[in-house]
Image 1 (tube, protein in one colour):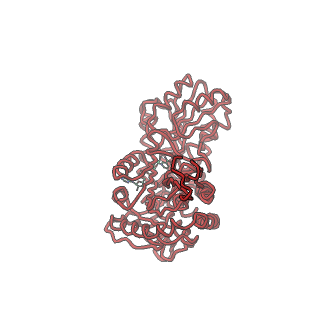
Image 2 (image 1 turned 60 degrees about the vertical axis):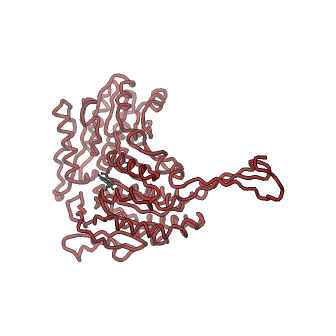
Image 3 (image 1 turned 90 degrees about the vertical axis):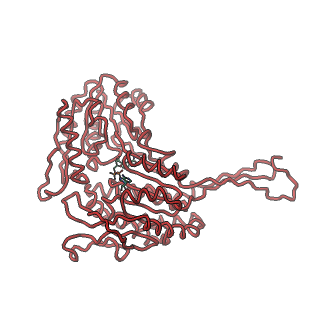
Length: 503
Ligand code: NAD
């Protein structure tokens, strides 16, 4: 694997018999820097348990260095005309495309997803970057002669130094929800990767530098809770975006806003698919199985609960057939850690103990030759009750819990009573029923005959309820409001004309 920056996360299989990659470093002011810390964590591949690297747990003094670098870079970056700034992202997009294979290999290795899933993540990153390159067209301000000889005009002004805190499940895509848009709009960024998957972001830093991003505009600080809290507290950081679990999203939102920062914190999810008897059986089964098992169920858009409305046994049978075609280590990746595997399997066992019926059982999956990998096979559980933990909580594994109801309203009641609100979908051939569900589902992203209703650019991404804290969405046009502040100018061009304001 090639890396643009010497000393970054270059693969050295021959140099180190123990670790595949050099220890992870922070990226500050355009260079990879060592972190002096007594604390570091191993980075382990979920695919086979290989020790890939170690990641340092930075302290607030490491963060302070990054803030100084970002603050120093801000005046010239923010003053550069946006049409020039986006040139960096045209080049970044091309480099993402050119380096797709190498980057996908890193993503796969540290996250455990399949190679095609890693490639899909890069394709999505390209799409996000394309959107950012259209920012000049999107942020033209408004201008109007509001009174004779007096004009009002608006402009979107960057905030300053912004932070992005990201989760493990999409090491490239979720960072790219924030990086191209926030930077194209003139901000400088400090990003904190998940300590479980820090290698991909190091790789992206190299590509950004190669694309011509000036030093200090983009900085990486590795770490865990301590550094997240320091980000929320640092007076030099103007805004914080967060993507991760609801528990941490709430903490980040509270802490950052109590320090008077702008904050958008995306949390966890529990997505329901409502399946009606008139749904097309094959297509529905394929969508349900793909939605629950893609990225080993570790997607905030994954279907984890299916609400069967009426008699849909023929579709449940087909879902089981589809699930049996999904093989760990082949077309199903690993879950992130052994703790995750244990957690997922205990949800299944607990539901079984309470009377649910496990139709396809993914517990105790082992991939030959990768015995230290952390795999859970696809799991279909029927007759789950809404009060069971597996029905209420985020499982984050390749598991679909089927609940049985008699009416659409009962199904909606289950969907609506869940505290999350990321996504929901309905499978039916009736336009009327689809419309009824679309109007009543309490979720930010709703699908009709779509298993993973992720809006594509230019539409924005974001849930409701306990899946999102703050205003607006994290991508698309909505993100412009988050990453900028609006300046309103009132101008009398020829004061000598003697026109009074408001006249
Ligand atoms: P996580 O909340 O454990 O971690 C997210 C980030 O917060 C990481 O950078 C981590 O280092 C940091 N963190 C972890 N614990 C912390 C603590 N106690 N205090 C401060 N910071 C802490 O999430 P994860 O396990 O990395 O990712 C999976 C979660 O992310 C799932 O809940 C998933 O639904 C959610 N997610 C949501 C979206 C969305 O768009 N809503 C997208 C992707 C993932």
